[in-house]
Image 1: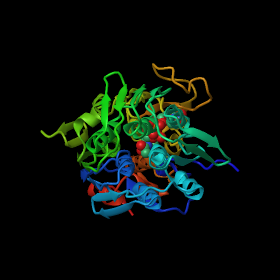
Image 2: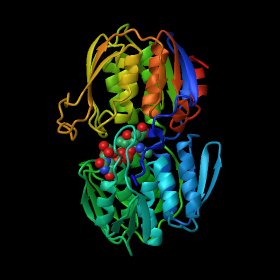
Image 3: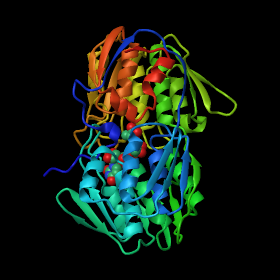
Image 4: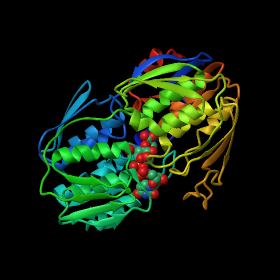
Length: 452
Ligand code: EPZ
């Protein structure tokens, strides 16, 4: 039996043509303001952290994205209680039951979050089950780095057809170097090391703002964690962890998506709820491309606009933090179809994250995808046959087309392209957007994108 695909819920396979559809009429500059709430890639990790204690944990600034529903269900199956209101969630994990194979298979197919409960399960029960990796729309999404981390802490793994079973009597502190600064594997290390016996160290760690937010949550719970300047994280294991009160950081990926919409349509959008320093690399690239922004004194209200009649083309390479975030790539590249010249893009984090450019071509964009590394870095994908670089020729006049959304970030790019195109576009699979962009249609309304 083939392994079940493990994917971010936002990267599920392309929906059918009769999926949730939206018609967008483009050609007008957008104008308006929106509020961005808790980060899709920070919230669920803080919820997993709550499973490391039997005390109540309270998270605020929670957004109503459906991606979180998977985590609610996971916590309930594991024996925890989840009480949710409009923008907060209270979690209490008095007990923890290891997920059964059927639940693991089902939940892992819908989300990348369940794999993060492996260390938690080993701490709470000495046993864990993980779905064998599978593909999704941006790459194979393996879990080998997670297994590398857990084995280092003393876990023993047995591979079956569709699942990997792990056992450990007591996780012991370990020194680990990641082959790549994986966000998920770093989070797995944090969950394992916080309650492990002795000291731990992770080098070549991910240090994204969402990781640092999780470090703050764990520190509130009683963990002893230091993030060194050279991408090394050191942890001293403690005997137990307590509850927490925490306001989740804003979603910098969503903020950049709306900013890219303003750039592509020549409009202006004010985004509330994300801190400037979490967007600093994006802001520099935005300004280089001919966008501009004003930021209020608190640094959490940013007004984005196109500052020049014609956008400037760019050579853009994605990277781990503090580089240009891979999740910013597809919305921003969509705006580069309107730049006056040739832009070159090199995606170095995922091997297959340029699939959305096929749809942009159907709207009239001139984009060619290559397997070569078209950037200063020879990345992990240069040797394989991965279509991970692109050349965009602009400006191109975009026209309406029928589109099927394959994943969250590509989906937002389609809406950006449709809003920048003359005429109407019919977009299928819009419900995928609700998994990572809360109140998506209301926000489109707020910035004046004509849709039905
Ligand atoms: C997180 O995914 C985010 N998802 C992704 O956001 C984001 O793009 C990614 O980090 C990179 O920043 C969530 O936080 C829920 P990784 P994650 O482990 O943790 C390879 C979005 O649009 N890898 O940093 O799964 C992997 O294949 C989503 O919001 C292994 O090879 O990402 C990829 O090439 C998309 N083996 C690279 O590392 C492993 O065991 C980065 O993956 C794990 C990862």
